[in-house]
Length: 118
Image 1: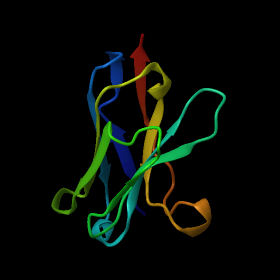
Image 2 (image 1 turned 60 degrees about the vertical axis):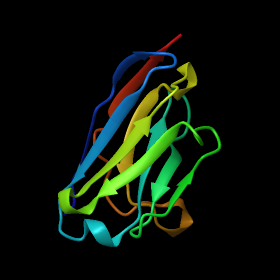
Image 3 (image 1 turned 45 degrees about the vertical axis):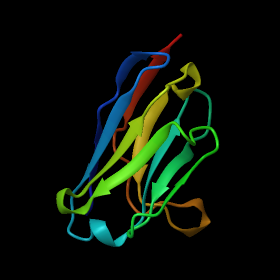
């Protein structure tokens, strides 16, 4: 059973940067697309960035140009570099493997809190 462990969150001022990491157990990590999701208080969880097994990327309009997703298949890890952070980026961030129909492949991890102060 694949386990996902997110880390790297914290408190940062608007305009600052953070780098999130997601370590995944399991040897088949490299075969699947991975994504970063976030859930703000009183809002639904949303997919903000995804990367295919081949390295192709896609971003939500709200983070395009500011966030960069990457992966290291040798380390079974996916990253999210977040620059020019805004208060509206405040949320708990999770990683998972998106599949068709808006579902995900694995159980959710504990997430990592990102708080951006104005």
